[in-house]
Length: 196
Length: 196
Figure 1 (cartoon, rainbow over the protein chains, first blue to last red):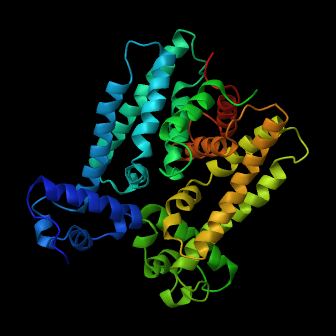
Figure 2 (cartoon, each protein chain N blue to C red):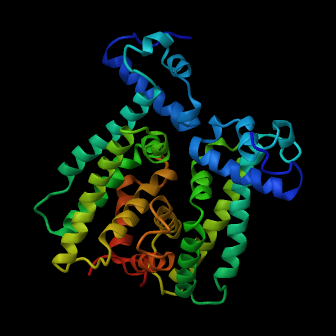
Figure 3 (cartoon, rainbow over the protein chains, first blue to last red):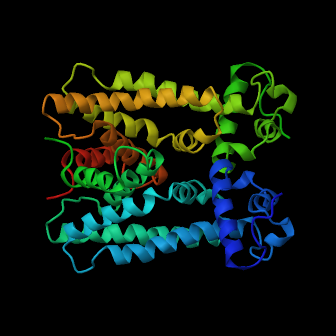
């Protein structure tokens, strides 16, 4: 076991987060042990407890951090005083840009919701609803002022989010399309549809 | 351990599939053991080996069965001689209808691709590509005859599939929308987009 990090301080916590992200992404939360995690970080298993109380804390920390950063950044990215269509375009560009480089976080935030215990589960579900709410509000405003055609804003928001987040499952940074090009292609699909 | 099924025959294999589906959905493939699976089926661990060689066989069987049934049914559902737009509508209705009642299979087929070993992994990836190919072909035909506006058929196909499969993550059979209504809402979104 190589000692690659000190056992105290924020640097170690960052190393724990990174190692946990990779381990959970590869094997799933239920399958990993704190011993494996300590080995991956390069610290003694006992030293882990200077930073986290248990495995559940680590999962919650990862998903919580992902969601709160997302919420803080979407507020910056979407101009609240713009027209609904402009807000929608900004939201799409932001969502693609934020998620496309966070494949592991996205996967864990979706596939390991099942492993979050109460009250962690409700906290994360609440943050997700808050984020979904940003898009639902934009669609509702667009419906109200007649600029967007949305019969069911909530269902349309889920559909748009699924479509955009799906990019993470196949995107390769070395591929022939940049994140910006993908955001534009998806924006056009969402705004104009596919019928010529 | 209740003995709820005989240890031979196709009925037991069906019970093993069903129990494995639930266990893997709840805990993830890496975390489950063949002993837990035998307990869930209500047979002796040793009897499992009358039906499957190992845990990997079970995962492959589940995902393979899901994909081959999907491929057989999409061929029936999408009329090969119809116009591209009609084919696209049939594909959307079929995809939603097939997946919406198979939440566990869909989750496992996506989240446990990581746990499939060679050559199982390539076999499943090949079947996925075959299914994606059905939609890509429709979009290409529509682009060729000018009925569909698709700059990137492959990317558009991924986007549509992500959007439609996403319904599984929130759909409740007891909810206020039927599967048919959801298929229609998503069809309209894909065909016409959202700008009024």
